[in-house]
Image (cartoon, rainbow, N blue to C red; front, side):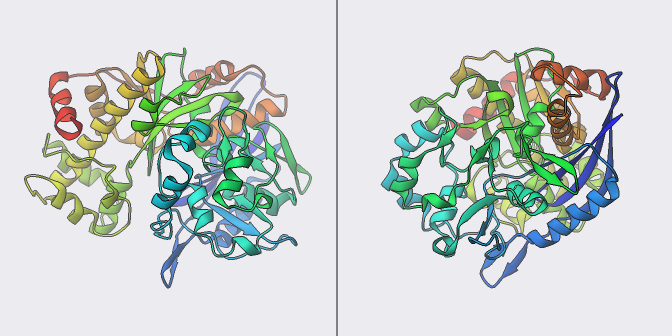
Length: 460
């Protein structure tokens, strides 16, 4: 058995998982350490506590024991700045901080929204790294910008770099060439020295205490898409957690005006693929309601939601739902019927997410020309039986739910291939998942015309 440590840093917690792969193709995954990821507000700025995260990583690697490789993935866009001596300049700022509010629209006008999309292929999001750097007071003092997984890798190995799948989320990478967009960086007024050398998934970054540290799909969604157990190419995926990342896997980006208008993004994937997707607000809305109501067991809320079909739908991607705080009140205010019971609020969230999933998958298929026969839901949302069934109903297509740990599994699979334990492309890696992971199937039911009417009502 070969053992690989997957460091997976999420927006609310981090964990270290160990994947053990045998010569018979068996793949076992074990969580060895979990630790909280709790943002800290200092005066008017929301920060990540990156030193606490690093301590959790070190504790997890100790708990993992001897391993044959280490890979790191996390959320996208956020970064730490280091000076010429490698010292961290301040705690990284959280993407939900409001510091880009006065930067986003003027930058779009300056650079040209259509030109920016044609070059980088990214959807219009105010927290993309380009806007954060333009709002960054420490940028003139910094030597390098390191995205969160690259910062952790630097502290483990001493090696500076930027892994491609995460670099593709910065809106500073040329989506066609896979290189930093030097002209754009100069035009935006961002110091070019901040952008480190790029590296591909599967390369060796360096070593930590004699163990190789591999570049994986360090954007967690890139690893999650590797972890989709698809049997053929005609699938859509939903990496469902705090965000729902909804899309299809392509060989080339889609850079049309129609794609830009629909706010789709072209992010880099493992093996040169393109993750053509839209960010949907995701289970963030439910998580915030749980926190506000102080209800730790989501099952209680889902049971109440079962009795409230079509309590109302909202556009979950409205900016009003992005910040934390009083999510139930904001959802109740957005509902035409002004219903405020917990069951109604939760059912509204789930119906609205299923509707947003439907719309994103339909548009991704139409804009890319790729047929979709089945929808895979991976990540924590694969446990949510009601959401999975509603998504099947809304899309009118079978939903295959699982694995829950797709991100860690994708991380481990890329490491194992880099170490020579596995070989082949993404289809070969995914075949391992189909043989070893539990997957539940949901067949569509109900009236598809009703979902179409809801979509028409919300978006025309």
